[in-house]
Length: 420
Image (cartoon, rainbow, N blue to C red):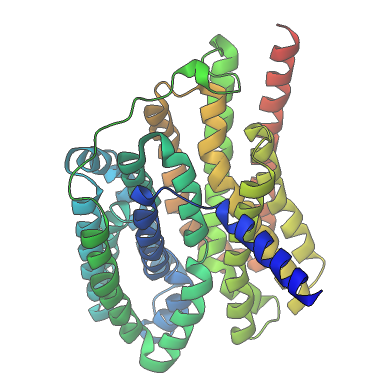
């Protein structure tokens, strides 16, 4: 009997993992990029959450100044995003992502040596360019170059890796900053980009751009692709752009400040890092659940569910402090962020169709990148002036505005379907 149970368990486990199987031609690149995404996100975008307080304590700069440099790096990244995309199309992901790893390492080394605020700012500006050549946008473009029509599944698999970046590097960064100081931690982060990311990009990605695969026609998707016209099309464009930009603002602000917020709510520093790290597990768990159980869900409703989880998580946090409440908040907000990443790609594809999809995403990305840039600075300024409680209330209002935009769009699309 025990043998039968073990056999059934192995069969079920094998069936579970077979759902994530990728073609051999793309699987190696996905796994290599998965590792580099964890390292690059963790050592750049997520770094301020663990190095900001030590920097403020040593250098005497304000929180607004420390996070203002980070925000300026993201604004620069938004400005170079389109030329970076053209360079990826021209030269391929192998060359550009390897270059991005080197640029990130340089920026981190400049930060580690910064004797003054202008040099600190210069380091973040270098990182602004490096991040645009190394993070999701570059990785997604690289997978599309390699996989063609298989890219959507490959991109979904890659997001499973990326969701662990904060879970790995917030505890690691906190430990390194305590052990060798924030400067030493940044030197180690730079070494990881040079010794892990750069070789993986050079050795595990194809040297030449494979032959392009014919894109799907607008009529090949299952939603309203190619059929939206006039006012409804403009409404859909505005609703998606607004909702995803607002959620990018919320997620960027919380990513940068979640640890000091949890400390302000009564957790110890060690507890705050542990709880904040669970956010990554919430992201990955939600993405796995969507991949396995919600493939047939209308992506617009997926977007509504994804965005709606953030207000719920914030309401839970308002119930009071404590480790358990903070854990529920971290997992819930992480799940929201994980699903928003998927919905941001899937919902516009279904509503507008495949034709002009890249340009469409590029148009919507501009406000989101600006929102990501200003969020840490604005949130820091709100905390400095009114405290963490007011800052969290502002996050709730922004998330509800995003949810309202998607709800209006869903109602309009439902009305259009009924009127056909």
